[in-house]
Image (cartoon, rainbow, N blue to C red; front, side, top):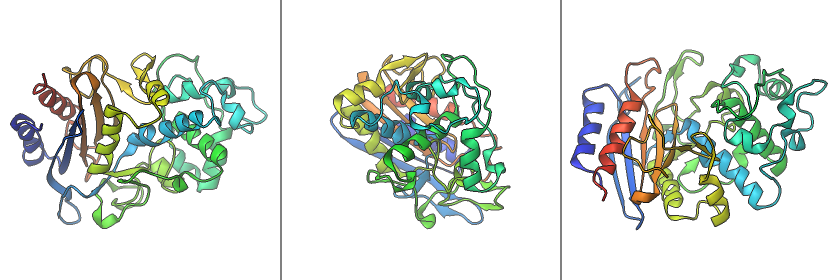
Amino acid sequence: MISNCTREVLRRAVEESGLPGAALGVVDAAGERATLALGHAALEPEPVPLDEEFWWDLASLTKPLFTAREVLRGVEAGVLDLGDPLSTHLPDLAWMQETELRTRTLRQFLTHTAGLPAWAPIYAWGEAGTIRARLLQEPWPVSAPGEVVYSDLGYLLLGTVLERVRGRPLRDFALDPGLTFTPDPERTAATECCPWRGRVLRGETHDENAWALGGVAGHAGLFGTLAGVLSQAESLLRGGWLSPAGQAAALSPQAPGRTLAFVAAQPGWSGGSLAGAGAFGHTGFTGTGLWVDPARGLAWVLLTNRVHPSRHGPFDIQTLRRAVGNTLLAGRE
């Protein structure tokens, strides 16, 4: 399933273009798998060879693989509804303020159509308790709902909803095998030499906002092995990721270019231009990604540490993602 062309694309990225390491996994509708790992888990402070069992900081793959899935599990269990306004579960939100944010629904937050800004440096606000309190009381500028604005802030609020409804912190939620919030640093691919923390990050969340909240938040903090993330892709392809009704809801179009949990195939999509109209996927800032093309009976996972040793390097991760998707799909009937 991994063609020589795909292997050559990844070899060039690692050996000639400066990508430290990459792990690719592919699974088809029959459950047959193929995997490949190249390069290094770390280059600094010393080289560490990569193998397929290493953990990866999944970054924004946390959104679909954990937060959106847990929200939908809450819907399946009858403790949440996609039409619930945020104030239903966060009654203290924007206390003593007038804001439409309280009326925006869980569905709008899942699809990034709630009107929130994309990001804010909340890690600079202080300690975790202060950040959690201020997140709910900050007078966020809220635009009209409907337009897709990819927002970490919206998923931070969804994470808070989950903690309130389930009565426990996110790090205590059960996870599937191959996923964790607490990886072994010695068996984790390095991300950045972080200027703020003053060290190379291995086994701790790269995202500053999630790290400031204790390492886990609704938008980032999940780690996974190649096998673990590939199992998520397989469940999305073959069924069983949620109940049949829940999975159908998660994958149905909800907003321009968005399902409830994923990005739908569209021009310029990270999964490549050969993907079918029903394909979907998601990426993470650290260089991770998962894609599923049901019509072709194929799903694939590409995990890289493209931010190592710095996010400001010249490597073009989007071009690599599209090239991998296109070369994999070119071999399908």
